[in-house]
Image 1 (cartoon, rainbow, N blue to C red):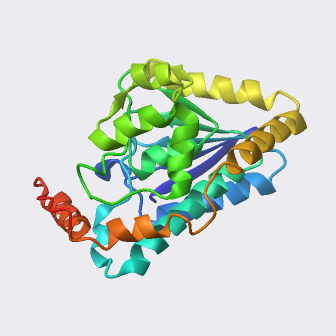
Image 2 (spheres, one colour; image 1 turned 135 degrees about the vertical axis):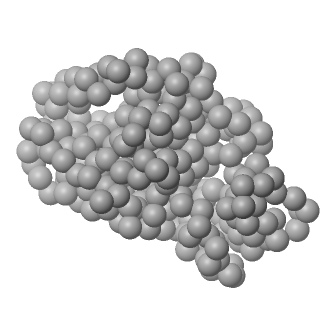
Length: 258
């Protein structure tokens, strides 16, 4: 099983379970993530959802790139970003608080999943990045860019995306992207303690606070479709197909700007 859903008292945990692939997400794993959100919302006894990666070396290393080999026209990139947006939006709309337990790398789509959670707890060795300028040559949706800007500000987002570099845990904490840094051998207990602390509080107050903040931030985003021209520009480019081929061949891509 590539995802494992567990519930212990008021705390639900979804584990991304592909440690051999650094927990890279397949379409089925994205579907399971949405299903976990549905299960948590249906069960009144559950008060917090924790997301984590198996193996200790990666939270999620992005979407499984092999799935991009079938992209053939303008609709494929739009459909992918729309599908990813729907997953991220569903995480954002879970009525209960969500915590990303980040051990190791959170890259690409994995970084986006971590960032859309309400809180992030990391280890000193955790790293965060969306290195698409160095790897695939695609772009993010307007909603994902908005989330990044809301978290760390436009200058930091440009630095991160222009360079394709990764933030270490200390820099991520300084930027406000990470809430707590905990030793690797203590992170499980620390997250469980944080989740229990939240679960013990007034559920309607917690729910109202989360939803109120979500509505404030959502009002600042682009209208649906306003990002389509830029998504198409990248996903239909020769550079994108070169980036996918180079990634899978484990070589450096040759960018042309076409």
